[in-house]
Length: 118
Image 1 (cartoon, rainbow, N blue to C red):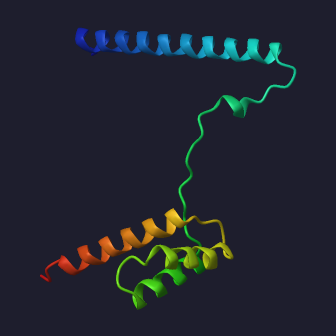
Image 2 (image 1 turned 60 degrees about the vertical axis):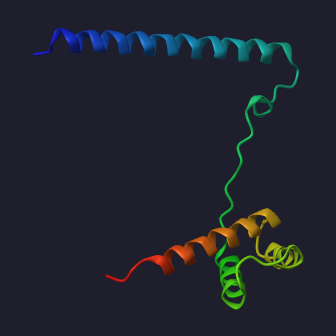
């Protein structure tokens, strides 16, 4: 059996979903009006840009690991520029990606070193 409290919760949820549906219908109507008003409609122009996450390729990762193993922590700005130039041959990457990778890699290695052996 459903209790009165559960029924009230369901009513509340249905009301919320109804409001969301109305908002979506209004947004769709606005988009249709804009589309009719414009000769060329670009739906992507109305979206919020999403920042993609950089995932290094296997080759990029092996180069980064090799540099990390040979060096001490994060390289200098000049060295990061050089590494970025080399990595660009194997896929899209920015200097900020490379810098952040070294920062994160150094932090991971420190955490790993701090773990007491049981």
